[in-house]
Length: 271
Image (cartoon, rainbow, N blue to C red):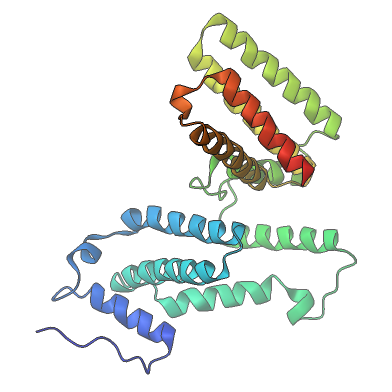
């Protein structure tokens, strides 16, 4: 017998948790939801986080509301599976982040004051380091930089951690010199035809690029997203103009498409 849905009179978060409990009910829950594990749900969690970022990038607040709901569902899903195992529940998740935010903002919730934003960030990193130590994570400064991060973001975080203890190129010029050195090594491997070594050298180039972004206080993911969006705009300009001529990119050539690309570039600069 089908049971009624949780009452709409419940607080929305309580109703969501009841819905998830029903979906995971061993007797009459959803077969797909019942099959899931932390590992199988994790890719959806990452995907939903990116969809939140996409809505923000598009400044679509209506879509952002929906995507934040999808992301919240992921938190509730993981918490429910943990509760079923007797590990923790949603309330424990909320309690943990509440405590962490109070602990990491002594200038708001205690009497500490900071002389500058830089001083605040130093204190923030020191507090995080103390938390890692309290959890027994002392083998390496880099141990808890998540493996699941996008590689460019992880490179940025790794370089920030290392820079925090002085393992850092002193100036932008030093980083640029290292970038040119790595590009030279990449070119050399390409010339020899050793694609496996070229792949490794490409990674070295990208890691130095992440270091350069850190040195310039730029988020490399943001920079690349901006360039991706720019590429899409300009390529769609090519497609639209070719369509007006009754043709597709496959029916064009590089010379024609490059000329249209430059038209799109000039049009953007004129705005």
